[in-house]
Picture 1 (cartoon, helix red, strand yellow):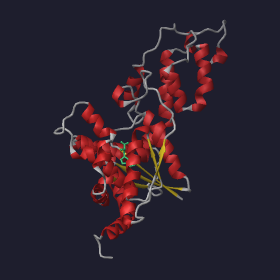
Picture 2 (cartoon, helix red, strand yellow):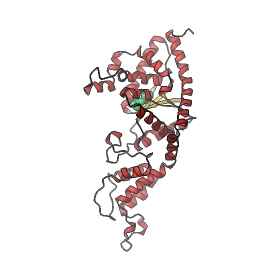
Picture 3 (cartoon, protein in one colour):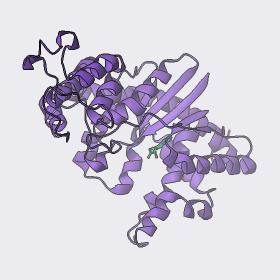
Picture 4 (cartoon, protein in one colour):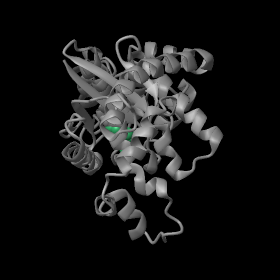
Length: 343
Ligand code: TRP
């Protein structure tokens, strides 16, 4: 059984790209019996950007609710909030004492901040030590595999290096994890055709209410094909998004596009009633309908978790108890090897 671990930054309600590209695949992996999954919300990492406290609370809840809504089973998966596991920051300190400055000086996140002109007074130590905390997240649980995006590859290398260095000095204490850098995950286009990303303000959030989703979808720019004429599926985000959400819908939707008719069987030169026309407005409705249908249960569950924050809290606390049990065993090993404990 492989132990898989990954951390999620609490950056707010995940959008469709996050849901299809990251959450659902991870939830699926977690269901496999040859895997044992650890998933946590990396709220301590968020502190490096000094978020507004209310926003951090709300975003942590939104992220937790979304994962649970997407089918994460907290009985099967160890699902917790990083800050509920004090063994992690403790290990972080221990690791920092064998982490060479040179290694952290080369870390992208810190280097990027400096490159953008931040002075030493503006960069906080937390940002600098970010990779150490991440190493602690991983090493505290003897993780075998850590699925991450390309941007996190270097952090994983630092983790491996930290584990090796520690082991060299104190014996085989840590398990050296492998990174699983996701091979081009499905990139979901945003509403403006660029990659879907919060920073482009082109997202579709399937946990929003229908009205909000409709407003977003309605804003998609379309060409001026006359009503009833064939629509082009090429480079059309409405088509791509609807198909990404409901792959089975592709053939029938493609027919609607190429015929310009809602029900192509009814069409023909002699039966050309405009009620059967399929135009951009209908393509937009198709997208909304696809999102609402496919995520009906998830939306229901999301609403439940966000309106019952106490239950959500209980769920995370329970997860943290399980997590601490594992982390404690690793810390016992670490502390014994260092001479911190007397056993
Ligand atoms: N740094 C990761 C990110 O920005 C989140 C993260 C924190 C993480 N700790 C982790 C990912 C441990 C994998 C393992 O996405």
